[in-house]
Image (tube, rainbow, N blue to C red; front, side, top):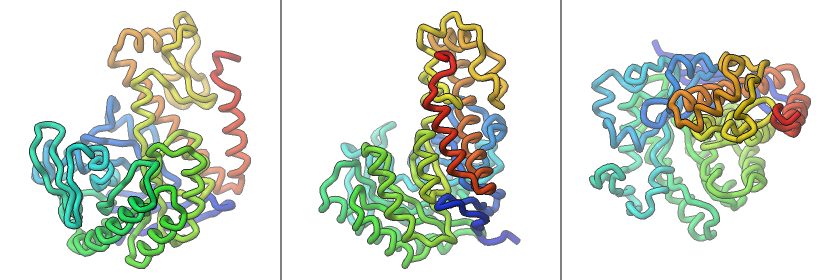
Length: 377
């Protein structure tokens, strides 16, 4: 019999948290970073490599998968885990963020968001109930409520309207989720933009509704890092300590470090793979742009001490060549390297929290980043 979704907080160090949660497809150690598998794949990286990087959970994209190949088709083929050959847990977003980005193609009202597919112009209606249905058809272990996400800056009136609509949709999502199989989880999403009072209001109302976990949404949408961190500091104390906290769509390695310091447990972002496809490698000495001319004849590896084989198998000159030649292999290598770096960073944070030395880890990591690319030393 499948056990209920459960989060266990095992250690705190200041406001940084160490724990784990259990799903029908396995345990996830937190703090955790989720690679993004937008269309049933982490771009340019095989599922086996994603697992080897240390990733324990992936994010799937409801909007893209509902358009192609379709949730019912994925369900008929055995669900998203089988479809994409990923045996571990999967979290699916609700489609709200993608719909926000389609502002020229959609109409929003109390009942639903209606939008045209960016693929062929077909009209779709996405209600809170349909969003939950799609995510359950996909077989997601963690399902997200449908919400309205606004880009910043936004007026107070628009932010308040989005918060209230998102809360009404949250209640509808919870009712729809009652049909979910045992063991699956539903997360609510805190909105409110850069308005502290609205953030608190949103968080308190979601806690009253009651969810398995709570996400902080509507950030990493154009605001400075200090605003994002201020919103986390505002929201985290309102959320129950016994539930996981997920910062959506974030971010840089520094964002992850600072957000964990403020009590966040889960993250997702396209940055490791997107930046890899554009020639940037993340390393313990900060980002390295392999496309820079100074790498053209550099025989040294990217980082001899990394635990990823490619960082000491291939020279910087070769990575530079692959990027300049627009070879797919270059994108594959750098994407895989970056995923491994992100997972190594998360593992380091988990270990340092367990040891009660998170502040030391945070300081040392930032000092290494400040030293810059090791090619410049």
